[in-house]
Length: 256
Image (cartoon, rainbow, N blue to C red):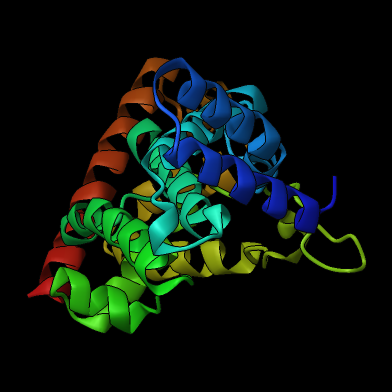
């Protein structure tokens, strides 16, 4: 069935439903719901691969469609989807908001989103088209920039995968992210430890050189110094403590 045929058939069924009651009206509305389920599923598919199963998303969308059909007033417009689509999208967004946030927006944004969803549904039917951010801002009595920020938070429930292609060449996000140069870490260590090491006694500096530059074992260092391996272990522990204190003291002085 083409969109034009679906719209015409839907309008006819809704018109008949306004003149019916009881079981007859329920049956007509049920036909409208079944006929427009493909639209609900299409809207739900926009949110696939965002941490929620497609089946669950379609259930949310179909329930929203049912609510839209039951609350639609043909006298305020003859196109059900102008009213139903914002309703379904709003329900899908609320579903993600209640399920989880990958990045939690400010509380003021979280609080205004339900009001925006309700205002969007109401204005869509009264205006016969989706409302603009300015119209929504006037409806909920909020600044336009705050409304735009709230509307842009729809994707915060989903964290993009590093393996997701993000360019026409098929490159993934992970491939496009800059890598850390190992030289930076080495430079940082030199800046922090250099002054602290220069304050050590010559014997302590010699022990560090043998252990970390010449890659000697503690027993080899003990033989070189004429002490036991246990004494070398204690010397290293004391040297590490001195270095930590020196680095911590340097960081405190810089902060001050």
